[in-house]
Length: 379
Image (cartoon, rainbow, N blue to C red; front, side, top):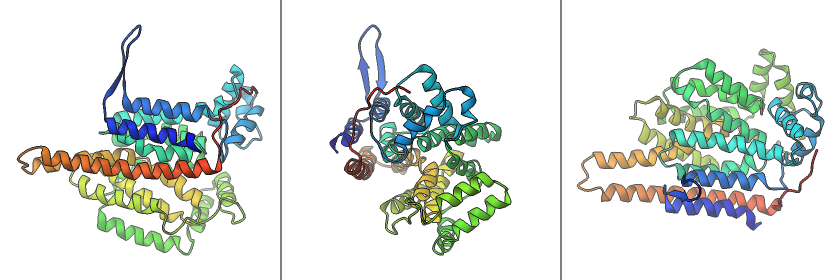
């Protein structure tokens, strides 16, 4: 069990030392940001593991059939094109079977690194917030992790209102998993103004839909009207009550309350900002809890669909903390000591919350799936 706590301890350590840089002396001098080191460690940790749950062994086995470029589009393994292309590439190079999983981890975490570098005001905190996503997807469902990571690259096109470029990134994410289609709402979220009152009203309606389990009927009706038969059959299969993962989310799951709290603080501290980024962060916080409730009758949908919006918490929480400090400074503090104390307290609280959440994920994963280093098995 203990190996799963290694990335938790590493991320906690770097969060404590802050945004300092690591200098490596050699033939040339390299300066690496601490948050980048954190992500590199996560890539290595996930890339060399030789055991997993979910689709881990399916990823290793199914790709054996992708021996030619033609097999990418014509195969019977029922996997998305992105995975098939990566499997073909790995097979062509005669790399170890684990390389296909490591490749998806690299894609996922590299995209997250770009996302953090572009928008986070406290990158080390963003990586710690990412850690539960890492345990949930990169260690279990690498295709979903890749789709989530790739979709974050569409953020500039959402902010700049470039729909065609946004659509290209969305399609690329879709090639790794069809779940990425939920990301289409990202483009339209900045066009909607959501405050606390409006948000609570929508959530009340959301509960009225979710409690009698009308979500499945509505989704199937939409897919049928759009004549998306493939997605219709997939959705119907996933929501079949006989499937082992089609169970309801616990009513008092702490993640509901966590993202509800993120929505509240985002509305309070980012509502006065005129920038489209702040509106996107508020609305993605709302969309996260909305999707959680809407698909609460199916746990895997609840947390997978919502994560395409919840990933923006990597940016929202650091933005709120720094924004609060700026507000405290601007209202006439005699010194910066008070605002620094507020910033430090909120930063420490955020670290504590996501550290505990990461520990819970690591414990759950470690108690069910022993960590092993992969063996060099060739396809």
